[in-house]
Length: 150
Image (tube, rainbow, N blue to C red):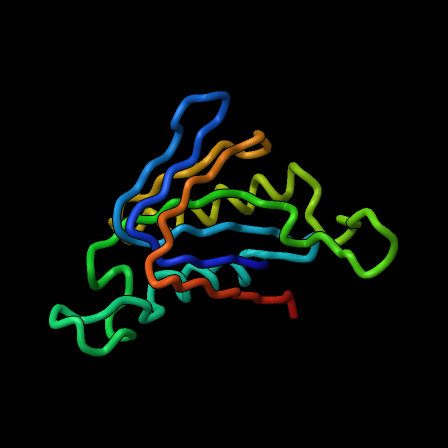
């Protein structure tokens, strides 16, 4: 499982000209599911996304003091199978390591459900749709999280 995690001031996702998910301060999560992913990878990733210290404290001092949970932030979760695009050969990416849509959708929905148990506001895009994502990156802070099946 791969997640591009971005600290944002705001973020929104649009499908066919309609905003389907919108957040204020928090994290934008672009989520790629591999064909080998299981619930174990989901649990690890949920914990990381919620607990990573990516926000400053109230004084603005230490930049890496608070988690999204501690600040009561919001989450926008967008499925993105292209995170498993392999561009090492040829001129066209291969998506052999991306999960097939039924598996990917099942794991993506479980991921969102587990994030919602945090009590934070969690918005999403539309699985499998062409989406436009507007991100007001804060910092900018952008990290790549990865957890491979054992």
